Length: 205
Image 1 (cartoon, rainbow, N blue to C red):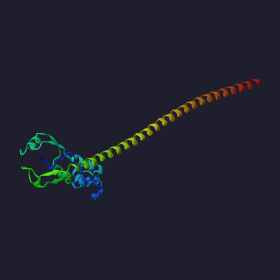
Image 2: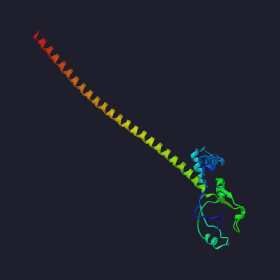
Image 3: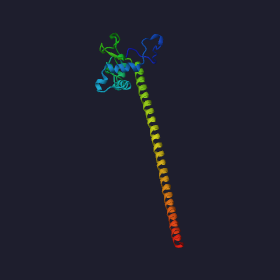
């Protein structure tokens, strides 16, 4: 067996009264990213969300098979099975807090004395924090998208309103032109009548 112990169910103590220095994990992940020089490495200043996501992207899940030490039938059978997980040495570079050096007295025959182990239960919190960060980022982007859509709708409404006003002005202009033509025709008629009247007066005289 490659673990220290095996059980069908694991129940870990999680009572707040047993804990101290309780801090939001997002802040710790941001600090973990900064300690590893993330902004300098990428050549850009990253937001807190980006730092947390960077930690998530650095995790390297793998499939693997355990080496068969040939000590017991159980170990030989287990070596044939494909497993999923992480490499402790990889995790130690990103999140050393979830990696432990095991006690050599618990090692099986043939295993190295400085064998490393992973506290997989702690990774659940890390993955949850990263998922929350991605969800918050998505929600913020959706809100920004809705705001832009509302602005676009307002712009479209303003354009339609401007077009309606332009059409109204065109209609008013055309109406004014018709009135001017009518007035001009009336003036011409009046002038014509006056000229006729003047001619008639000259004849009478």
